[in-house]
Image (cartoon, rainbow, N blue to C red):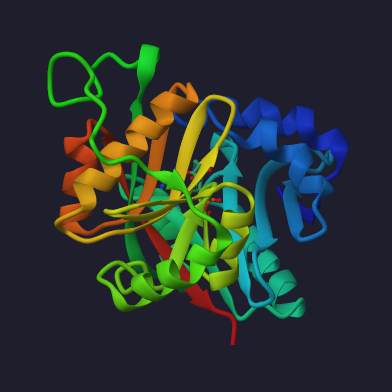
Length: 290
Ligand SMILES: CC(C)(COP(=O)(O)OP(=O)(O)OC[C@H]1O[C@@H](n2cnc3c(N)ncnc32)[C@H](O)[C@@H]1OP(=O)(O)O)[C@@H](O)C(=O)NCCC(=O)NCCS
């Protein structure tokens, strides 16, 4: 059966929810993000619709900067897989992004997801950098104490909110330090990666999301129930101290969990593991839109 690729509309939510509810063992984020994507001028949501005009697949592309496109949420209902739908959606989205000036398209895939890795490799996407998503519960929600055993003992070092004036030193330290190269100068916020600019740190400073300690800097975004650490600048010697003090910050904020998106560098991964996080490796892939 032939499918039509078209922009998603509000009325598609029910069909999309029906085939995305249980995509992964933990469920899926697509139904709850769908309306936000539709309302965003920088985002294009495409569906593949069957002969009855019911969506059986979708994919989403967002322009994260004038030249960087981010693809996500490729989902095909199980009965319609291996018919080229995800690949057609991806190609139409990169055509859309290119027509708006994007020079590179990127996406992230968890390293266990061999189907998605094969599918995007066939389209020409190549691994750019390796990352680790690290997460742990904190405070009352935590099954393990925050410290190294026994009662929680706050670290001697505290992270403090940094003013936007700290963005210069933080950015300079990062660009000349050991973490920018493995990150390929990218940072991952809300599971979307793009190039980190000094303006991002300035913006974080103005909005209370830039933190500093002797052990380094971090961009951390407090949400209702979690603290999301989207960027860190530290050294091998100080990585654990910074990680621990960010866990303490999460406890002080009263959130249920803390999550880190970090480049896959052994000593940094070791630090978040030692601080009690579970980790999930993933890779960011890129396709030049020449
Ligand atoms: C991954 C997914 C989007 C692929 O969609 P799809 O429409 O079946 O993919 P396509 O038909 O365009 O695949 C094109 C090619 O990619 C490769 N491929 C796709 N799925 C594959 C799989 N499960 N295993 C191995 N290779 C695969 C094949 O080379 C395929 O060509 P072929 O069918 O002629 O052999 C779909 O399986 C899906 O919805 N999975 C669950 C959600 C998910 O993991 N999304 C990606 C999150 S990053």
